[in-house]
Image (spheres, rainbow, N blue to C red):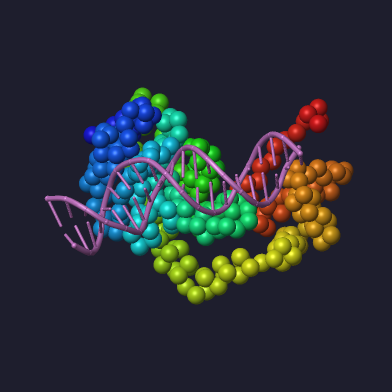
Length: 291
DNA sequence: CGATTCAGCCTGCTTGAGAT
DNA sequence: ATCTCAAGCAGGCTGAATCG
């Protein structure tokens, strides 16, 4: 059975299987995800440092079965670290090959804290942006349009490629392409390991930087943002910047008024850049009659 | 002040490692 | 070879916080 045939089998039968069998060895699809596909991939990628695992839940079926490749030096669990993973969408119409992050360990870190969900998302996005800024995507997508029905998997996605059931069934994607993509993703994963794990996060300097960033107060972050804007050659008063931040904080829908050319759009763009959130910045042209 | 949201806890189920 | 138990996973329930 090829990878493509396995994927099609899972997509065709998973939802039905959930209804008819408990999530365990009795189920054919369970065995397919937990063992067959793992053996198949291990046969292709004979790497001692990579652990391959597939899961569709324990006891209970998950909505999002996954097949992951872990670098043993980074993580051996889907709950933490960065790893390659095939994720199936809830409706079983799509499967994504992605470089993704475990969110459970981050959730545990913020257990009992205020705005837990938001902080988890912010951390996932921060890591995502760091990696994207330093590693070539090799043609994989970074547009944040991975949709499977689980927010943390979606936010945690660093690079990805989508395969729809239709594409797979109609031979628009070949087995060779699937394997080639996975090989490319492994090159990215290796690069991540060399650039981030063996150096940045493990050095004292890296840890200090991380601590420093977490400790910044709103005032300090605003001050940094202001300095960034000045350094780009634009001038707004510090008061205007604070007012803009406060307005956003009060309600995330802010209307800036003023004649054209005074820098309304630019302010927002620079603000996003300063916070390293450019990838979440979209410009939507508005015609006069829409207002 | 009722409705909604959310974190925390509990439950059900299986795997797999280690003890017996 | 069998038993025990922690880990892993998702779903459900509940009380507290927040919203409108």
